[in-house]
Image 1 (cartoon, one colour):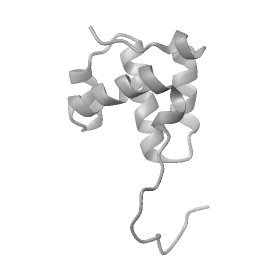
Image 2: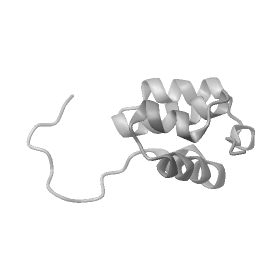
Image 3: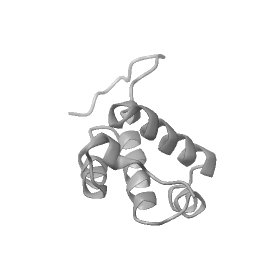
Length: 88
């Protein structure tokens, strides 16, 4: 069974939830809330149905977090045109 190794990064499920509620970018919030749901006992299929993401994407987020920690899940713009309007 897939699980979130939050103890390895000195975090709790509540820390994941807080990151999911307060992160600046929507994609970052989505990732941490998915990790929180899995830490609370849901499986990737359930989380995928709730978020509209593929279950393998959810699994990739969990593996990335387990291997590299929270910083690896923060959204980083990877290129393309800059948005015309920046929300502040």
